[in-house]
Length: 146
Image (cartoon, rainbow, N blue to C red; front, top):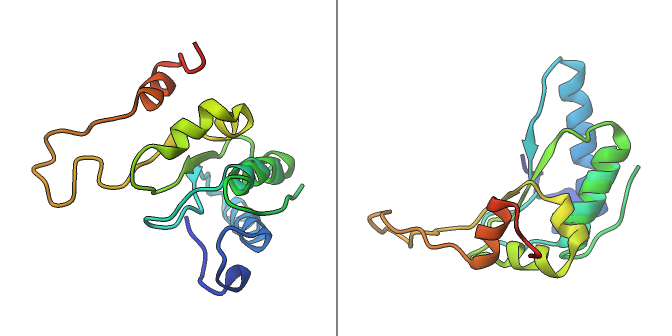
């Protein structure tokens, strides 16, 4: 799930995008579609933790924007609009920055269900070695913060 380029005057990490995603999910619900995952993360762009938490809460009332904060706002929005079961995929960054941020910011970590990374195995590689960060591994094992 993404959003058209005109959303937020070209700033996808905006309250406009959260509202767009909520409307889109409402439309899906009217057509008896169940959406399990979504992200507003752009291809090869940095994530925003607060926005994600806000979307989560808006999917269950609505929040504001900024880079890490955007994801937190997304989570908040999802939760406050009855979409608490929709899982958020964080980012399409290069590397594992969102997993590292989850250790520093528990609210961000709680907003995210899936952490993505772009070209984990390297660009145009044999795709035989996909290294991960220590924090990303801990998240997968449920041991982050230990």
